[in-house]
Amino acid sequence: MELTNQYAEMGISNEVYEFGEKVLESLKDRFHELDQVAEYNQMKVIHAMQKNRVSAECFNQATGYGYDDVGRDTLEKVYAATFHAEDALVRPQITCGTHALALALMSNLRPGDELLSPVGKPYDTLEEVIGIRPSKGSLAEYGITYSQVDLLPDGTFDYDGIRKAINEKTKLVTIQRSKGYATRPTFSVKQIGELIHFIKEIKSDIICMVDNCYGEFVETIEPMDVGADMMVGSLIKNPGGGLAPIGGYIVGKKECIENAAYRLTSPGLGKEVGASLGVMRDFYQGFFLSPTVVNGALKGAIFAANIYERLGFSCVPNSTESRHDIIQAISFETPEGLIKFCEGIQAAAPVDSYVTPEPWDMPGYDSQVIMAAGAFIQGSSIELSADGPLRPPYAAYFQGGLTWYHAKLGILMSLQKLVDANLVKDLRLC
Ligand SMILES: *Cc1c(COP(=O)(O)O)cnc(C)c1O
Image 1 (cartoon, rainbow, N blue to C red):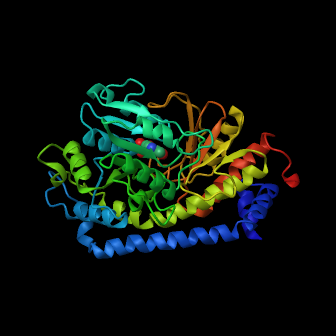
Image 2 (cartoon, rainbow, N blue to C red):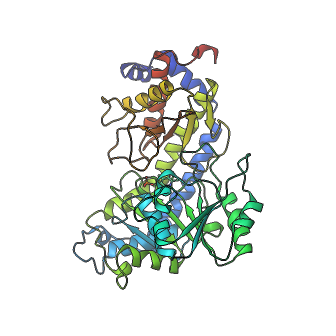
Image 3 (cartoon, rainbow, N blue to C red):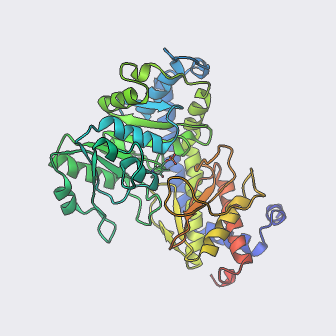
């Protein structure tokens, strides 16, 4: 068939292509389930847009102070409605996910308060926000203390430890949904709900914040549906749908969002200022497309796990587990394996496919990181991308793909690079 010719022209051998098709054959039912989740979430977003009367006027460019920026105010209502929250802050002035998380924390904590992570070490960039690694402007510098309860060896919550860690100073609990650069499992929304319920029973006024990065639209429920007070994420990931050129969001209780708005702009000004500068159409359209973009990314993640597990590499989540974020970790055990995988992802990109990714010292991370991405939006990880810190187990964190077909090509190309470098066993035997 001509499809194989097309792949061959792009450097995918017949052996690799056939292996991929064999794996895909076994995934039909799972892909059907993913399509149903996407359909549900697509309806959720359209319904929220209709209810809030999104109109062409919302896409107008606002400049200057941005008083009465209808596009911005309506978008925040759409986010709040979609995620079942009282209010939302969705802005290009929130530069990324880390910024959104820092903002949510710094605005809702005061000197003398304590922040608790009941799910182990948070995402690398949060270490500097909190002050786990000393940093200018950290929460620690403002007299906000931090305590952490690690997960049990089997990856479940240490409820006894959490009960002991909660004290009269504990003001806010941060729960990271996605595994980030760890090899622990990602939590389901249901599990997060159980944890929030447990914490609220001990101290009902604790603010429960969920770092929802990479989690949006993977399930039909979100953390706000199970009792979270705040949910935070990046528009350069899932909810930006690959179109938002910048941005972060916070949705949650009115009071939490008010605090965040007064910190983002200024006391007294809050949500009233902050012109949307012409990005609104991309924010709306990206959010509208996000459920199907996430669907493609999930298919890619599941395809990758099924391919690499057959070849003997450890995958988190494994080939059959249910999914709660779009990230796929594959442990290559050697730096060469990780590097070749990333080279394949890069070579499959629509943009910058000719460059070779190399490990570098990335700000905010404590070991060298290799990253592969040929993205329309710089650094966007809802677009097909892979990255991983150069430290054992040399895990590649693979995510994204604006379309399923692109994700599929990326995985086949990565496999081709590993085959060419003799880093995998004979495909015919798997
Ligand atoms: C990506 C990510 C962040 C930070 O988001 P950026 O947009 O990269 O700053 C925080 N937490 C988790 C779990 C993430 O995956």
